[in-house]
Image (cartoon, rainbow, N blue to C red; front, side, top):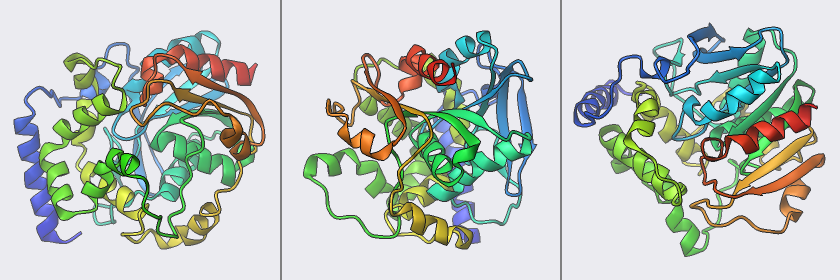
Length: 331
């Protein structure tokens, strides 16, 4: 990143924090009700902040949030898993909360292969050979990629939203107008105005996306404030912008992931035991009643469920559905 752009983003971030007075940034991610003590670990690229719950000797379950959310989406999922004897781990993705890049000069990239590698690196740093995983949005994408590239590491997967691997090699064709309109934020982030807008107005944009993607759900200010500080991470804007530019073939990825992205572009089938959960009240439209698409992408699909009362942020709306699916797969 150029020094001038970095200075602009730093200034915009300060302005954003000042304008968004509802946000208390002082360790908010560590002060949420019922939150475990914040821990950190180092990989070759990141210092990852994470929460850990339950018996340290229990079988590990990793819960992965998406954009633009954080680990608080899983607050209701943790207790039943801990009660069943599992070790529950909730990492903050790159660009969120206390997670930081080790090298202050390294490009803030967030292509899908990098997010998937972060999951593997996180498990490696904890000495975990095999784990179960549930995720939504970016977190689900990381889980899908790990299940494809390292199936021996994933004992079970709960895929909120279904298959989520992208072709980042071939530019996509224009979609129907209704779908293009739903993806306005992606086109916005592919412009310089979108960079400036996300830097200056991130909380306004995120609240709008929360409401738009889960129109039947009422997000209170208190609920938002429990996550809001995670989006004031100094790398948040660059990470988000790169992710949405790379997926539309408008930004280069990391050289180390070139072959991985080529493989993922073929959209390989996932073979680990999996349950797909789809929110019935998603702002992206009601899910298809036909299971054929999910059956084609998950060769070991144990169940596919359309979850009533859930929008895009499915774990927050129906934590019981996520916990039950994990417990069923691990029984």
